[in-house]
Length: 345
Ligand code: HPA
Ligand code: ZN
Image (tube, rainbow, N blue to C red; front, side):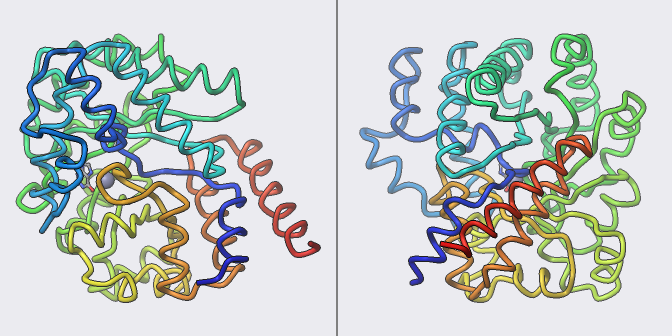
């Protein structure tokens, strides 16, 4: 354990680019919302919920994640969920988030898509006004459902585009990866691209390197979410390095979902040292044991990251964001100033 390095991490300005807002639902809020909305939960206590978070793979997590999300029903629920995440992120010196949300998880239960947008947006706008916290929204399609379902979701969301022009910046692809390759969603991604939305997709978490190629070629994504299985394909590693295609890596998620057996075996440091544009993110922090700083600290300890490498990870998070160039430069300067100031003390 290195106290000074941990302090350095805590104060380091950073951006989070891979965060499912539904995955930030802490058991305490899950219980409170279940009571308020009269939704039955298959758990007797908060402790019982936490004890159930013992996953063997992505699907074993998704089963609980979708069940937990059933307590989210009103605009106020989505607002409180998002406000709670933002408070945690700010405490970790996160300056900017590009958060994922899964409308199909909610519309499938009869919650209108406009309610989901409105609650999340209210929290992000309030945080911008009150704290200068920067945030935007990436709408994800559930890949275990059909492309027709994704197309209908995009159609349902497009009328909201103007109302949320300051926030809704892109689309993503999540849920069960294996058996649902990127090519399945080529048409809906082409439509989103024509609308001027940014494109990202989960690929190479549990799926093979071919899914990363597929996300790049068939979907034309601008970032890969996870991407850790790229290491199995040397030509792909070269492609990712040469293009500086960002990877939003989630170390504690990979550990909890058994993508790696031990954090000391995680390839984040190897990819960083090979010159890839990797970032650190929390994915579903309420389920995977920690928010941004917990991910940074556990990774730094397990992989012996240097202060310079941590600075590189923080800079990558801003560079890989969809913020404008001027804003990025301002954050990058902030990181430099922080590093200089920390060194002087
Ligand atoms: N992978 C795929 N789908 C998800 C994840 C993830 O890590 N988190 C929430 N939905
Ligand atoms: Zn994810």
